[in-house]
Image (tube, rainbow, N blue to C red; front, top):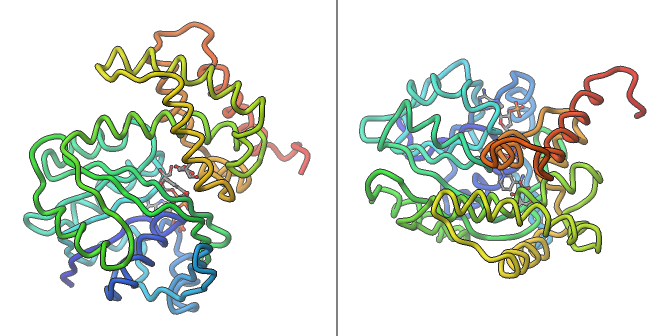
Length: 311
Ligand SMILES: NC(=O)C1=CN([C@@H]2O[C@H](COP(=O)(O)OP(=O)(O)OC[C@H]3O[C@@H](n4cnc5c(N)ncnc54)[C@H](OP(=O)(O)O)[C@@H]3O)[C@@H](O)[C@H]2O)C=CC1
Ligand SMILES: CC(C)(CO)C(=O)C(=O)O
């Protein structure tokens, strides 16, 4: 079956994107999931439920649920919204469902997923950064907490096709902004995630915890190292302006549990190696704050695996 837009990963971000497409009048979107049970649950619900907290309204978003092992569509646009650690499992799926001339948009936080997809699909891949907060309450229920922007662009070429996504998402109320320097925006988003995700995951708190005194003190330490690493890659950032940017973004998603906090609460693996782990590695070893934070999150992952952890 031929479709304009397919989504891989129907979790918090995938469901929210399907919701904005639904508002734009697009209703036949295949969404690929990791578990058969999720596919069955979505079929029963006749879609995914998305609660728009900004509008205080509940929607059933009709989607076509698929399991990733059964690639039966041909898609002009593939929006990949699985967690970074699941991306390798989706490479074969993307190969099967990408239509001739199709474009993939990799929407993971952190560094590594876009690079992996580019290795396989070259210039047919765009990167995207998501500036909204969404919480997956159950496999078929997502709360959209606010923020209305996705920034996207290709690193090799112009990807003019993306203007179509810009048009359709705009109809639904989401800004899908296309930029020529997507790497700059990926680094900027890395700064935000390096602060918000581990601090909310360690404290098992909503994003607004970052605005507390210790939260802001830790933010400065994390960002000082981020600035050093970004500088080595040719991106110059200034600490006070970065802190202001983090504070503004935390204010607009304050009620959300970051994706990493959700992972920890669900006893799932986290994306720490793609975020603070990446920064620590780029610092070249030694006992950095990003290294310590990475180890602490790995310790929590281990504890979550263990039957002896306190519930
Ligand atoms: N949540 C948020 O507020 C934000 C998240 N992000 C980023 O967006 C990305 C996605 O996060 P989020 O939506 O929270 O993640 P979720 O954990 O909510 O959703 C992940 C989805 O991927 C599916 N999946 C897992 N493996 C596969 C596979 N092999 N093939 C197809 N689908 C698969 C899961 O299926 P199943 O349901 O069956 O398990 C699930 O639907 C992450 O990189 C995150 O950092 C960025 C900004 C905000
Ligand atoms: C923007 C933010 C911090 C929203 O929660 C996010 O990217 C995430 O949760 O991973």
